[in-house]
Image 1 (tube, rainbow, N blue to C red):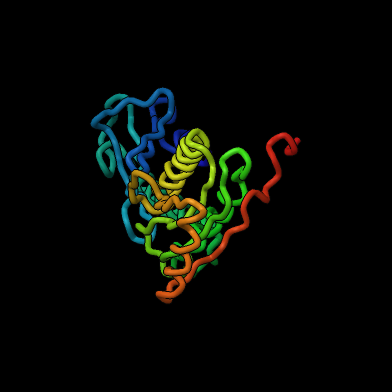
Image 2: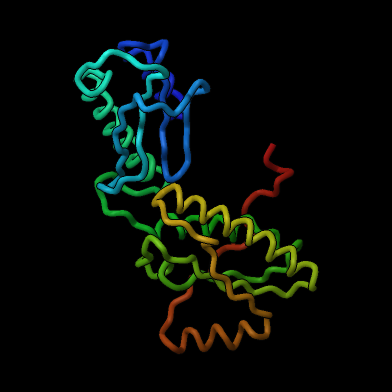
Length: 234
């Protein structure tokens, strides 16, 4: 991870490298050198993404040192740390764009990566295992106007038995929790799950979907079970 490289690269650039240790805080999580100790001899610079503070980088001395420009630290060390923090922010912004498939310089398109994951979920489902007939995408992701906190709305048509339905719900819950973590890493907004699913029996689906379209709402049918089976990956 890039944080580990940054942590190890900083001490040699400070005036007391053997007594220097570093910590990065990012979205409530801490990444630090193995010898890190929290001391009063420290300097700190915020990490920001899209002008929003998401963490900080701290340099600590493990013991007291003579007074310099900012406590025991040099003016050049303050400038260097601020520059490192700025560069980390630029990297994190770029990484978010890459993960979400968005064009650099464009406003975040929250619907796009949600749609890609919805398509991936449908493709990865094993219809025989779960009894799934059809999957439809609707709502803000399908309309292309999803916001940072929007769910991914799906209709899942399942004709399986009780065990298949339980297995399907557990499988989709795993996806929902994973996508909530992706959203948290991208935008810092916590969620208990990103999938909002309506499960329908095949008989229900015919009338529900007809009513849906009659009301002027749009649905996107997603191809189901098109991904290679796990035993075909190797």
